[in-house]
Image 1 (tube, rainbow over the protein chains, first blue to last red):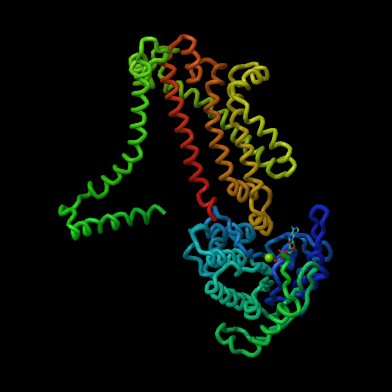
Image 2 (image 1 turned 135 degrees about the vertical axis):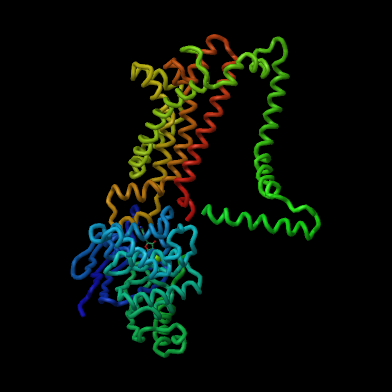
Length: 264
Length: 299
Ligand SMILES: Nc1ncnc2c1ncn2[C@@H]1O[C@H](COP(=O)(O)OP(=O)(O)O)[C@@H](O)[C@H]1O
Ligand SMILES: [Mg+2]
């Protein structure tokens, strides 16, 4: 299989006044079509920066992003992002938040009725059809994140970019939403690039885990294939030797070889 | 959101008599009037009564202070008898210059509508442009902060010199008094658009126009309305100054005219009109703000 998404020798240097920080150093990664890849690393190592470069929201200092062999350096709906803090527009209802994306992406391609149906279809996919007329302030954090996912899915992106999508949720809601995302990806076959700092989440959801070293000048330290068959059941994993071994590998990487050194 | 409220009200009202019966506080089952109208009347009274009592007190003190033979200002009873026709009938017409204060207020409101309307449109446009640029913001904000403190009266000569005609000068005075807070607040609102919303717009590839209408304006709306609310107060403040220029039938000119012919009672009545209309204008803008910005503030 050829690379669907390719992160090609990306460096990122931030200039703030006279101070320059090299955040990312020579990151090269390929993601295949339909693959679920997680990027894990300690807080502040540059994961969000890398995802924003792929999304086109931040320019790379060196190197570039190839999607289906074409360079992309601007944001677009082909790389839909689910942000950590949901980023729903608070003055729009749940429906209108998704509809805004649908109207924009399918303006010339679908009729009014089709766009309505497609909006509802995506809300139903994440089980949020019942809350279509609510505003973001009226629904829970997990529900907001579901709507954020619906909005991203509704764009029919080539790659779905998730920046710690479950980070702000309580453990139960998080587990529930992880299962939903896993089922959706199974059903729709999306290509997903997800950022996380949660080891269990990475192992449970991913086909491949990319481990980043600590910044500054973070690079890819190790890549681990998770060969667990799908569909994966959360409860069965607790005793699954492959699962435990993967988990062990990631933990060793993060907490022995690249222990997070507190700056303060 | 109104529907469920209406539905639950009878349910809340229903258990009350049951409890009352059990506790034997009120053996008579309260009727509709007692259960629903009375509490509401109570709430209205609680809001209305204190200001009314205070008003009566102030009027009484005023009456006592101004009853002496040598008093320079008219007492409330004197005003009542001298300006009786102005107080009881706002909309009489007895001659070209002898009309009710209601008509005068309407003429003034027309002027304010033009001046304030211009200030709103231009203020929001300028604020939007300035808010986009850090340097425009840094350079212009101190200048605006100085300009906004200038009194409407001080703008009069400048405005007359520039326009050489009273009508546009009056509107300009209203405009120039109220435009600064609208510009400043809009610019701050635009500056404070969260990066998240900009990212969403970027991923969706919204064009400039879509970004303006779908992200900028709603996101900055609470700030814009703060500016608009300060602005309506200021433009109503400017009306007396503006109408010193125009003459005619406005409420501002009425005061100027009454002063020149020593009709102090009429001035007091006009001041009450101005105060009440200003209060209503403020409430209208505040009401529109709560409707337009619902859901924007809370996230
Ligand atoms: N716009 C920016 N300007 C300067 N430094 C930045 C900027 N954005 C992020 N950084 C720095 O880059 C590093 C990585 O940040 P980030 O990608 O958010 O980390 P992570 O998502 O892994 O927690 C941090 O040290 C942060 O301070
Ligand atoms: Mg991050």
